[in-house]
Every structure is written in structure tokens, then in C-alpha cells.
Image (cartoon, rainbow, N blue to C red):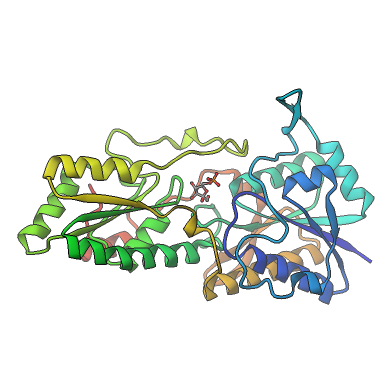
Length: 360
Ligand code: F6P
């Protein structure tokens, strides 16, 4: 029998299990055998992998996380091994090739974000491994696709948080900021901000001026609104403090430590206006738990399409959503910069027409 394999890499994301389930079922339904690789690229290097059957994916559709496990450190080209209390880095591509050959695995489905898909592209280019990528991230910032799975769930979670934060803001006459994830992009902040009726949305793509934010709060006060709601993306920065995308450590899996944006903002607002201001950091709640119906459907479509690409031997591609169709794109295209929100996009115009303040 022909054999495929599947792994999940990088941070957990709602819909991972739905993709795994779809890949496994499609492979089995078409007479293929399929290996599940444990803990992302770690299992590919160390050989921790096993055949999967229908029972392994039964009941996992609504479950958060990944039944295969994941890490966001392991890179076969720079694989960390602890020796005498120190980390030593090795090139483990020979081990990867040997493990795939040992089990007769023809092609590998990599479900991951830019880090994992960059590694997959290198495995294809430099080692001749046949890969198919599936675009995963709550941030929605991967190039060559209109949607990554996980984004819809993160957006829904942030919207619910905004609905709840309104209660305290209104009762206590406060400025309440919600800091959401998104790395260098503002997709989650923008969409949840509009869905949750925020007054101010701060995203990395539009550097903000504190005076403009305060101006909006004051204008609301003058109109009789004693509270304001701000959504702030973790990557949002004031004018002059923008983060350079070049600082992204692509594919190296060094942790990106963002955060602090919301706290800094409310401190400044309180100092300058005297209005009680608070920040809530939504954090990993955006990544945990059950995927929305939209993400379950998208994940299933991606998983089926990835297995189909393997079966028709269309390799070294990433499945992608374009005009509501699943298509494929060359996987090396993912190595480009993150997909940011275009500042002239329709959704920003919508926000402006609604009187929202973007801090500019
Ligand atoms: O890419 C998903 C994401 O949750 C980002 O929004 C966030 O910046 C990052 O991962 C945090 O990752 P971790 O804390 O797991 O390294």
C-alpha cells in the first residue's frame, strides 16, 4: 500500500484536529496508509510515528489542540540536543530521510504556520522530500491564502470578550482595553473590534498617536458616553515605535515575545486623562478550545485537499483558500513576508465610516 504521513507544527490552533481527521480519513478512504508523526518535526527526526486508523480520529473534530502533539522549537536543520546541560545544534536531515524511507512514506502533509511551512519548503528544496502544506494560524497572516484556519475561532473568542468587557466599562465609566494576538498583523483586532463594537482599534499596520486615541475618548465623553472600548493588537505601536518586519526571526523558532502593548496604552491614557483605565490580555484563550463551525468546515476542506494533492502527486504546494475555492500555491511562496492588513482595505474603510478611531 502507498503511504503518506501527517504532522502538526508550531503553536496549537483551533481546527488542527479537524485537519488531521480529514487527511487521515481521505487517505484511508482512498486505499492509502497514513502515519501520524508525534510532536511536529521532533517526531520526524527521532522517528516517533505510527500508523493511524479510523478509530484514532474518531470524536476529534470539535476538540482543541492536536492529538499528534506539537512543538515550536524543533527544526531538523538546526535541531537542539541537550549535552552536559547545554544546547548543541545539529543538522538532522539525514535522520529525517532515513525515517521516511524506513516506513516507505511517499509524501508528508505539514500542518503549520510560517515557521513550519518554511521548514517544509526547505525539506522539499534541499532534501527532495515531497510535502504538502496546510496554512494554520489564528493570526491569519500567511501569504497566498485569504484565510488560515483558526482565525475565525480566535475572532469569535475576542468578540465574546469584548461583549463581556462592555459590562464593566459601562458600569464603572472606564476605558477598557482588550489586547489580542496577531503577531505583526492586525487581523484579529480589526475583525473582532468591528464585531464587538469597539470605539478604537489599534493595529500594527497603522501606528497610533496617543492624542488621537484620547481625542476619541474625550469626544465620546462630550457626547455623553462615559466609557470607551479599545482593541489593541499585541503588535500595535505608537508612531515612531513601529516594529520592523525584518526583525521577525523567520523559521528559526526563536520565541517571539510580543505583548505589553495594552498595558502601556492604558497607563498612558490614565495618566493623561485621569479616567480609570484597565487592560485585559486575552492571551491563549484565543487559541484554546473548540473551533467554530466555519473553522471546522475550512479545516476539513483543507485536510481533504491536502490528501488529494498527495494522491495526485502534486507536491511542494500549500493548500489555500481563494474566492471560496480551495486551490494550491507553491510552498516556497510562504517564505515571503507576513500578510498584513492593507491600510486601504474595505474593512478599514467600513470602520472609519462607522466612526471608529484607528489612532491615526
Ligand atoms: O501565531 C500564533 C500566536 O498565538 C501569536 O498570535 C502570538 O504572538 C504567538 O503565537 C505566541 O506564541 P507562543 O507564546 O506559543 O510562543
